[in-house]
Image (cartoon, rainbow, N blue to C red; front, side, top):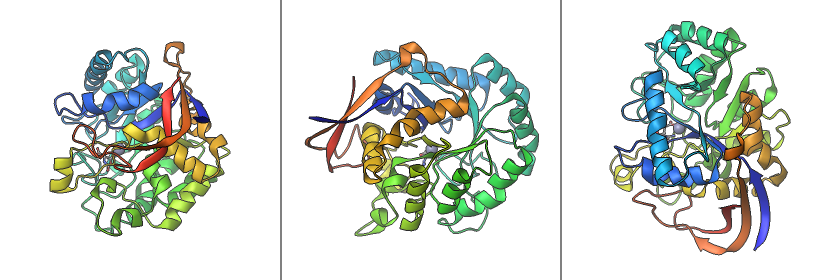
Length: 353
Ligand code: NCD
Ligand code: ZN
């Protein structure tokens, strides 16, 4: 076994842990929690996480599961709330100051899983952004157009950058913004340009590894169907290029691991790639293909800490070793959920040191 890389204090800045009630939280949380020092769980659960009280309770729910797997206290949780035009700013600020809320997530109305209550126009959100900017509360943007706008699904991110993201950035220059799961050349270039010093982006493993052919050619692989959808190769290459040449530390690990039971995938083709069981290997594979393994530590952890001004507490510090191993087959399914690389052979394996 040959060591490929050691990574310290990995933080997954975008992960869907779901809930105990929908049965997915206990199945997927340990995969992520085992390897990371911190995780930022998305608020599009059922019911959604709208208020600071919801965020506090959701944290407790996650902690209950962590306790069950003897992982409590080994991983930090960054609670985020689901932003709507009705978000109560007093509650948000109080929750932020109390440490119950870390940030806010904005969904485009109707464009992805559980986003029907999301945002359809940004103007109505301006008073909320203003308060967030004042208090330093970060904003995560799912940058696609709302469902009621007639736009091709492959162009949705591009339009939303122009129509939604840039106006936010121009009007609130001190607001910390993370563009989530970027998929286009336009996004990659905007983030790396430095034009907006308070803008970063998360990048999923699938958007670093694949273009849309992987999902569409030779039969549709709905397990790779996620929002924003995989794009043409030129976009994947632009994202790779930006991550590879990132000197400013603006690209962050955010798996967007989004578990849906196989039965639900079959029935409605729900959007989401379940990468949690293999996310470390997936990023290492991508960075090896890009020939920039030396950039991985910054991407997996340091860039997050720098942008959010965060220090990993001693009890949560972890080292993950990734080794070159004999080929092992990724299971076709984990607990009823099909993972990234399902049925494929991998020659990398991650373990906690
Ligand atoms: C996510 C999910 O299933 O919750 N799905 C996805 O395709 N990425 C929602 C999201 O992050 O858009
Ligand atoms: Zn997501």
